[in-house]
Amino acid sequence: MPRTLLLPVKVKLLREFFRRERRLPGYREMLGLFGYRSKNAVFGLLRRLERAGYVARNAAGKLAPTGKLAGTVRLLGFVQAGFPSPAEEELVDTLSLDEFLIRRPEATFMLTVNGDSMIEAGIHPGDIVLVERGTAPRPNDIVVAQVDDEWTLKYYAKDRQGVRLDPANAKYRSIRPKRSLTIGGVVRAVIRKYGS
Amino acid sequence: MPRTLLLPVKVKLLREFFRRERRLPGYREMLGLFGYRSKNAVFGLLRRLERAGYVARNAAGKLAPTGKLAGTVRLLGFVQAGFPSPAEEELVDTLSLDEFLIRRPEATFMLTVNGDSMIEAGIHPGDIVLVERGTAPRPNDIVVAQVDDEWTLKYYAKDRQGVRLDPANAKYRSIRPKRSLTIGGVVRAVIRKYGS
DNA sequence: TATTATACTGAACTTTGGTTCAGTTTCAAG
DNA sequence: CTTGAAACTGAACCAAAGTTCAGTATAATA
Image 1 (cartoon, helix red, strand yellow):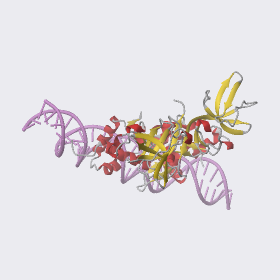
Image 2 (tube, rainbow over the protein chains, first blue to last red; image 1 turned 180 degrees about the vertical axis):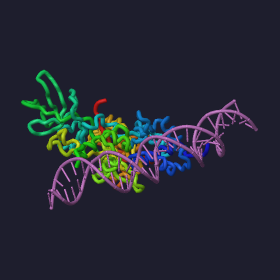
Image 3 (cartoon, rainbow over the protein chains, first blue to last red; image 1 turned 180 degrees about the horizontal axis):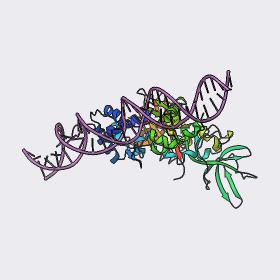
Image 4 (tube, rainbow over the protein chains, first blue to last red; image 1 turned 90 degrees about the vertical axis):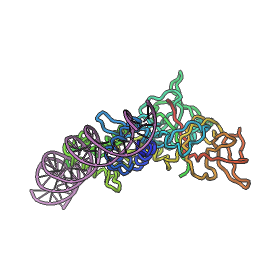
């Protein structure tokens, strides 16, 4: 085996490239990126990356990065295990937050929360909720609902009398729709961003 | 101007393709995707997409999608404005959660929270925190810290006596490091995922 | 009505992608 | 030391990407 960069190092380089450019480098670019002088070396590397699950072919045989390569965040278990050292960082797989949090991209929206009606559920004003439209809410789901011309976040509940919307804040009361009830969507995730 | 698909419709098709394949379609694929018969039609479309900011060229002239195209979530203001109708959905720009939440991808990790020491700050057990390593914490930042061989989440504070770690839970007390203090990283975002 | 800008078709051409083949270097195992 | 597997170089080749040019169809504007 000729002295060469280890595969994890190459994966790291590819990850950085993909993050910068939002695409895989071409053959010519990989020659420079990995210090190869032959296109067949790139060809062989791609075969190894495919076996390792970093790139995959579609039905037509076209190569594309997988979530394992195109992801942004490193996965880690619980903190107790300690933080990974810089040396082993390249060995940790990555995950895309988009793919982790969103099932139906065409139906998912971001909203900024501006009330405190769900604060006891850990949803604060200024938080961002990912809302999925066109899905029937199930009991205990948090929904975006229009009541009396105002949109709010509430727990969705059902009992003998019908649909009930419950806040997660002792200051507010449960609501029962009189005439109409508009469900904007179901909250699939909450995001709070610190700083900037 | 010949009757043709509107640009937003084409953007939508491209978005769906990029989400599926994690790459832009090639010229041949775009011919089928948009119903063109000439490669030069694709060439012209790419010029228009570039002017509209959906794709961009790097220094070497290579085309790649921008965040506006490669994003996953639709942006929306406050709920009060109402939800967008299906017709106008294509006009709304998208955002990538990865790019929105992560500044330094190479130094950012995901951790699952398994204590309640920050529950009054809206960080519950089972939540996920995005931790950025290698950044000096500033007062009021939430940090992942190792105290007495145990890792926990705490507010980072400084006073006359030195560094202090404050919980956001009346059940626990502030901590002052005796010998050593290890800061694993600064919490940049909190994520809570519902269902599955 | 003529004019002009835009979006296309179709063809030609150069560059790069993608693959195959023959041979070379390096290391580890027998 | 020999053998063999793995990673490479270098060359050849076809398909696809990417660009350019000449010309056509459509719709808004003067």
